[in-house]
Structure formats: C-alpha cells, structure tokens
Image (cartoon, rainbow, N blue to C red; front, side, top):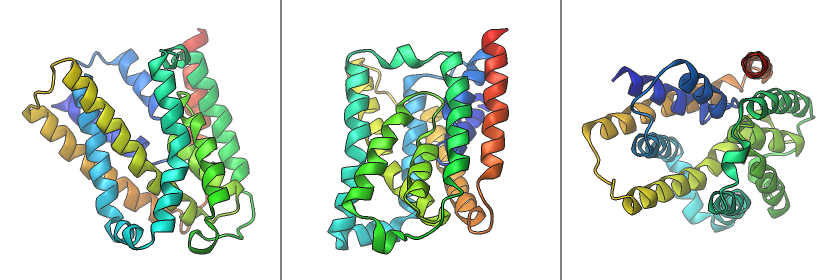
Length: 252
C-alpha cells in the first residue's frame, strides 16, 4: 500500500509539473525494491491522471465541443508525439534512451531551456493567438518528451513560452495536450494488458486510480495558482540539482 501511495505521488506530481517523471522513477527503482511497479499499476496511475485533468478542465472540454477549431488544434498538436512514440515502441528504440547518463543530462539541459524560455516577453494569449502554426510548433517540440528526463509538461511549457504565451496560458496548453496523450497511453496500456491476458483489475488498481486522481488534481490546481504569481525558477533549480545527483550516480 505504501508503494502505491509513493507511485501515485510521483505520477500525480511529475505528470503535470515541469520536472521529469523518468528521473524520479529511476531513483525509486534504484533504491527501493517495489513489487507493484507493474504495467497494470502503471496503466491505473495514468488513468487516474487522465480523469483528474478532464475533471479539472471539464468546462473547457465542454467548450472544446462548441469550439471545434480549438479541439482540432489540440488534436493536431498531439499527433507528432503519438506517432513518433508509436514508431519508437514498435521498433524497440525507446529503451535505448533509458539510461542514467541520458536522463541526468536531459534533466539539466531542458531545465536550462525552461529558464531561458521563461524570460521571453508575453505577447500572446491562448484565446486569440493559439493558431494552427503555434499548435504544430508545440506539437513537434513535444516529441522531445519521449526522451527520458525531458518532461512532457516541461517541454510544452518551454515551447509555449518561446512562442510568447504567458505562464498561465502556457500551462493550460500543456494540460490540454496531456488529455490526448494520457488517453493514448491508457488505451495502449489496456491493449498490452489484454494481449498478455493480464486484464484483471484488483483493489490495488482501483486504489492506484483514486490516489493518482487526487494527487494529479491537487498538482494541477496548485501549479496554475502558483504561476499566476511566481516564475518557473524553482523548478529549474530543482531540475539542475536532480540532474547533477543522477549524473553522480551514473558516473561514480
């Protein structure tokens, strides 16, 4: 139960903050011998985050239905990462990137890029300036999130800030883009579980979904309130410290 609690915190927090979930999972797997880090639990955790984001943005999702143009842009922006991710998994290339050195360096490098992007002036708002061009640019840059250590939230916020969206709207764009991504991860997770005849959901799965939902919802609410008043420096500093720690582990 403690394992599920810790994994739910990691999923709920790192999915939506501009830090790397891969970095934290590496530390967990290296120092803690968790027995519940199975595909089934992983799918459950992602389902919890998916439910949390659509619950928090339920009014915006209703607007998506009314505003088909915005819905199309979000969908369009999600295609590059989902297509690239599918190809990496299909040709078994994704595991070649999963090493401590890569994760350590990407955690630092993309943290610095987040810092630089946060210095860009603010000229655009999501309601008026989230064009097909900006959707494609953010979508293409989101491909980098497939590299462990980059952070999907981090790279999409970085891309939006480079395009001169304010911090709040950059985070909203990132959260909107998480909806199709989490849906795809959950779907393919279910598909793999079905293919391996391991689709039986237990009480632990339900607890995982619930805890992941709670921590994800709290994180979304906290982060959106936080960036109304503060910059992203605290996340940059945290990433650099974490990246250095991972590199020390990797090279010593």
